[in-house]
Length: 270
Image (cartoon, rainbow, N blue to C red; front, side):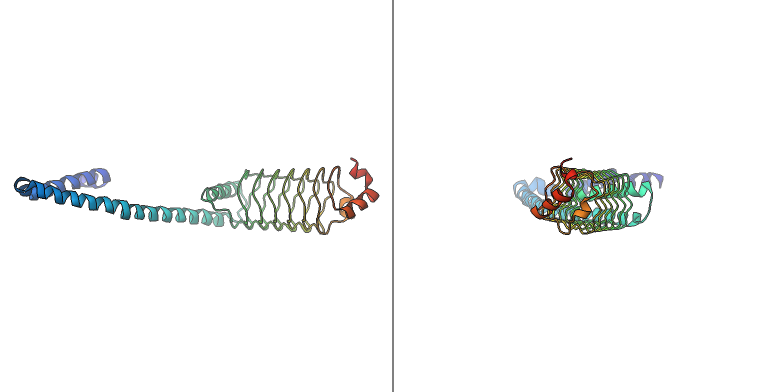
């Protein structure tokens, strides 16, 4: 019994034994045909061999493709389930496990991910693709998102405090009430984003693109807007800009630029 168990526990050995036994049986039964009419017999063998090649080429490859796709879909489902499992769990393990699953999903070309209420502070999200994802009310503070793609993402009430989003793509993002306090947003793209009541207190927005953004009630206190482009910004007022650190070389629509030069000349020239 022990010998039998040792064999069946080794798939390769078991398959080899079965092959040898079947080969002996088939050859012994076919031996008379080898001797009497070898030419006819070999023709039939070759015909069967061609049929086997066809089966491998069509059925085998098709089954392999279906199995592979099934495994990929199962892995994607597992990654998403793990993100759900770690949601609302405020720990370093939860943060790093969630980031790992995000990057695995990206490798499978998945970027629209549900990250609502996820805990992701002090993580490395550089170059990740989260276009169209939902990060509402997530904590992504003190993290690195250099050149991350957050285009059209939902970022309402999301916390990016003290994070690095240099050259990140936030075009068309829904970031009402988002917290960008002390964040690095150098050369970030906010074009047409919804930044209503967003907090940019002490943020670094040098050369950031804020064209056609909705910035009603946004807080720019002590923010650096050096070379920032705010042309077409909706809801922008001189009062919002009165407490910024600098507006030097920033670009505005003619109407608001005239008001700034009249009321805040020291910020334009510094």
